[in-house]
Image 1 (cartoon, rainbow, N blue to C red):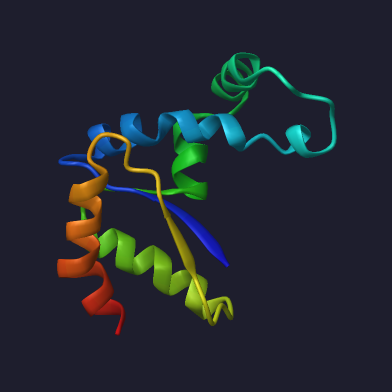
Image 2: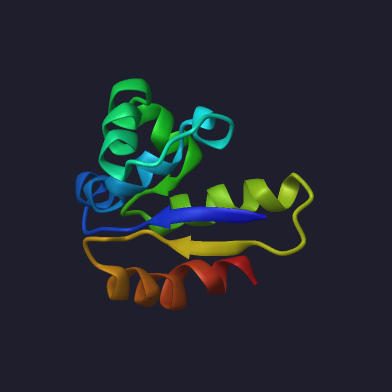
Length: 107
């Protein structure tokens, strides 16, 4: 299973850092003919609320929230979870947070 994750110094920063990935979320992109990335992003902003995006992507400054959401995937039966770091505001900070807090809690 794959999970998109975004960490930031606060939840708003985490969301803004991941916002460009909202453009990949609408399901019609996978069945209709879409080729313009800007139009795709604009369509996603119009059709997917930030709250809905947060349900699809782990977006939080709190490492415990990342742990909780990844454990939900495990409970669904995932034996391997590929984590995609979408922390545009601080990707290295996300790696440190996962190394120091998230992954040790999942072991």
